[in-house]
Length: 469
Image 1 (cartoon, one colour):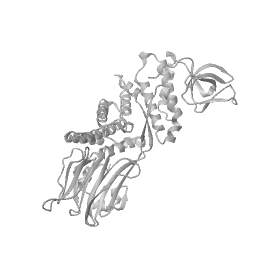
Image 2 (spheres, rainbow, N blue to C red):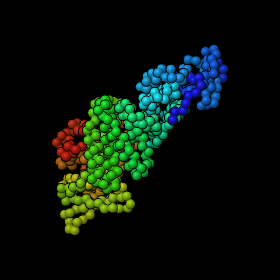
Image 3 (cartoon, rainbow, N blue to C red):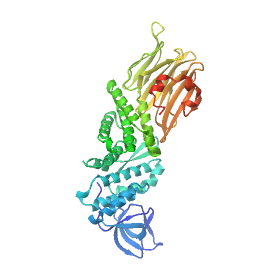
Image 4 (tube, one colour):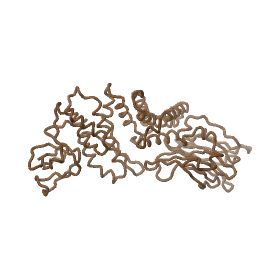
């Protein structure tokens, strides 16, 4: 909750404002103040305000042009709301906007309050959290601003992923927005988007609480009425729903609920196809690309196993707790010969199995994580059978997928499509790998730039893949 602001107050309007021991520029600097800090005003002398900082329990003098006095009365509420509306959409002024929002909530009569100020403060808090996210050194630069908004009860969470810090707003005021029955559709949509972010999920959450959380996220997304929203917001909601249903499909597949997993995966694909990427613009395109990766990762969820053409066959059996062990068999021999075995904690996608190169190689997808799908290549090397794992990426990847896109029989080359997110950036590539040693032969950002993709790409892959978005 945002606490009451009391007394005659001034809001600091500049970063690095000096609180001094006397009303002179050469007086001792007691502390640095930051945009949005709130001070009690106890007098004015020689162009300086005599103030007391209740947060730091320190008094002093501040230049009058570094702060703006505010009146906390119903009569002043419209002016405070106008400032809040101006700062709400001004990146870089989040702490100042949140401070004015707190002042408005104190000044406005309770019966006059609606969802608007709560949504504005929450949106600025979320934007500040995004700006503060990054390396530990980057986060330290934003520590004073985070300390300012903490004075108003705006709480942040810090999550570490791949050596980078993600700062997330806890969403309390977004929940307050949803409690207003007459909240504007845009405000409701903003709140739902803020409460369903995938990058703000606890990374160490167990499977049971994570499944419950995803079910809650799906319910939140379904409560927003699309008809009253602009195209951008509708596309953002569809992209977010696609990612949520992809997560649900993965969780259901892990619990061997194949039918439900298939339905969830299909729902995820439908939500993704409802997105209009061109309407998102550069700022929001990453949300669409993130949804593409998540939906692509569960492409095979719930699909029935298929028997590949040829003599090679894959069978699976339980291994140690949580493991699935697969065996690759040669059905030409009697009795059937097991060529190799391997166990994994990932989900083996038997519907993806493909036999190529005159039964000298076999490919299948394995999904070890919710938004991570690998390609396993079973092939014979120097008279011995082996499994090589092709990963979507190697350099600190966050999420991604890799998939079989075709085979060139003459040169024994695999056609591969992969898409990966690394340090917040998305990278898509189409490649030709030599089957014998999986060496990269050529690579391009589009399949049209590779001659073999034009002739030898797999028709089923082209029909079902999302890599051509």
